[in-house]
Length: 91
Image (cartoon, rainbow, N blue to C red; front, side):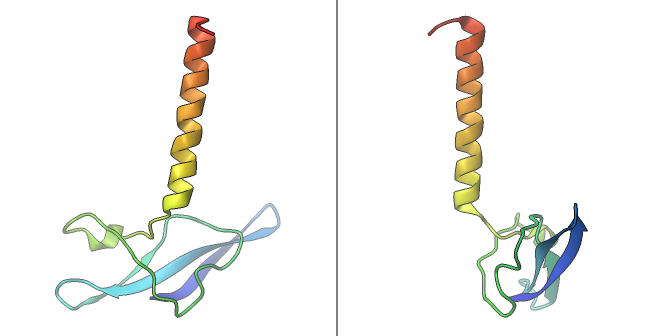
C-alpha cells in the first residue's frame, strides 16, 4: 500500500517518489521507497500496488512499470540497430 510520497525539487519542479509498506514473509512490515521519481504523485496514497523483489531481499522491492520498461528497451534496441547499420554501412 502507498503510504506517502517523498518530494524533491529539481529545476524548480516538484518530483515525487512513492513510498510503500508491505508485510514480508515473517509478517514484519517493511517500508520501501520506489526508485523512480515522477512529475506527479502517482500511485495515490492508500492505493494497493503490486510489487516485486528478489527472493530474500524485501528491502529491494519496487513497483514494476512494464510499459515504461518496454518502451525503454524498445528505444535502446532501436538505437543499437541504427548504430550497427550506420557503422557497417549495411543499408
